[in-house]
Length: 300
Ligand code: NAP
Image (cartoon, rainbow, N blue to C red; front, side):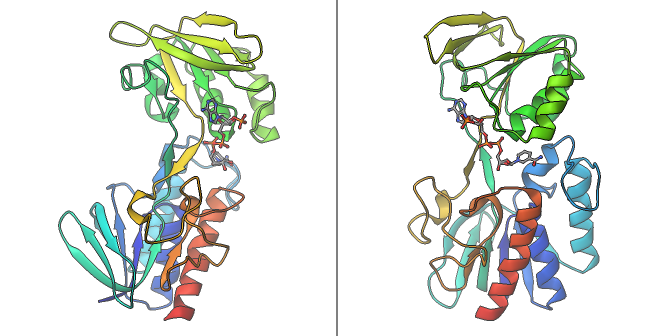
């Protein structure tokens, strides 16, 4: 039986691994992907993690992982498909094994939200993408659209301006949600056109994306944008299905926990993007990893 199982290896899970190992807890990290880091591995540039003026998300994730490795943290790459969190012995089932632990830190993060418009699902992978850094290179010299107004959409748009001919940034309001520093960078690019007050009504194309039809939310006017790619960046949803019914979640599916990461179930802690919180950043996810281990130690 482990002292602690940490589910997920994004910034929260990796920080928890560092703190747990230094606290001499017998901890196991269960990660789904062979590359640790969670969502940040797809971030082209991180400019707000202290200590690094600029670093790629992939490189930062590697640093977190090698830090955890250097302390002797234990990792397995398996998919968790069931958990039993009540009682003193927590059980975590994967496709291959059943693990038991006295505490569990849920750090499984979040994934991208879908638009839900016609053409999105049919053309996913054929011009519809949720990761500009992964797929941007396919659109060199072409026109593309990015949907969203948050940090991810604006970062994606900035990244794409360096590769493609033209970026249409479509946002449902006439003001971006993204940080001001990112907005300044975006507006400095000469190949971005803002499509304000608009949503994507449908995505069309024979076997790959050929155009998107936007709809103005104020006057209903439609506009056709001839683009080869659509990058959807309209926010995130927590990956919390497994825990629903066992741990309290809010209406949006986030696990209810404060800064101490304590959940409704004794011995179970939630860290990073999966928990209710005001600011989802790498630095706040890392902070959660530390707080979750601290709370778990108090429980143990
Ligand atoms: P976000 O901040 O929630 O922004 C989502 C954007 O998509 C918003 O502009 C929203 O519009 C729009 N949107 C939501 N649902 C939509 C829909 N159905 N149709 C059309 N538009 C829709 O999400 P995010 O940009 O993915 O960022 C997620 C979290 O990670 C945030 O906390 C963010 O700060 C953080 N993050 C930080 C950095 C960084 O610090 N460098 C980078 C990436 C992400 P409204 O504005 O009208 O609501």
